[in-house]
Image 1 (cartoon, rainbow, N blue to C red):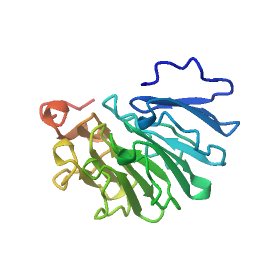
Image 2: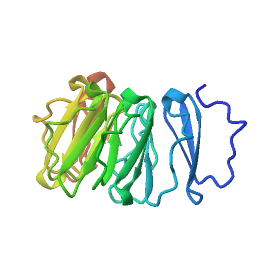
Image 3: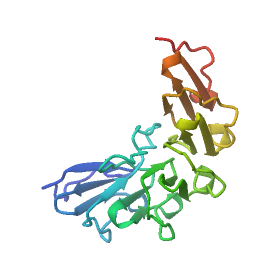
Image 4: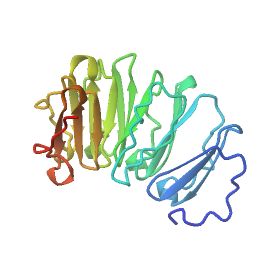
Length: 239
């Protein structure tokens, strides 16, 4: 029920495979097809999904493994596949369309989302955010307490969005040396106005904490759950 039996799956012409916490999708990019298996509530059933349109990107953030692979904010990549714990979203960038499947409350229902001008999608464990970088806008869906509610967030000048494997996002405004966070405050969401994002060269995360690295200065600043990496006050980041 979690994807451990794939004896009936046809893997011919498969180009990429991705997963949620309990399901897989095998993408046959050249044929414009996809096949899913595992828990149907976590994205294991996709027989009604159209994988055929040109410009398809599938975003599924790998949150269940307690990290999110850097690159979900893939505004400049041709394709990406990742997962949140229970849902997938396939972005058809060239058409300004998106289709979701899996657990509706975790982002598997995006029927009311406007995907026009979307440049990249990121996620937490149970929510997604679609960034419209050129417009300075963002739209969120999924569990509101896990970052699925961002109506009050200012996305102008946002270069990248990072999500923990848990329930927090940070929108990084690199040119301004600023960041804005939302989601579960204990896990790195909420108010991060006290964080100095000046000179930050990269942001990394665990399931419940963020690290902003200032590589040129040999410094780092952390926030979120201290037991999950949110306290790095004694760490030497030089060299």
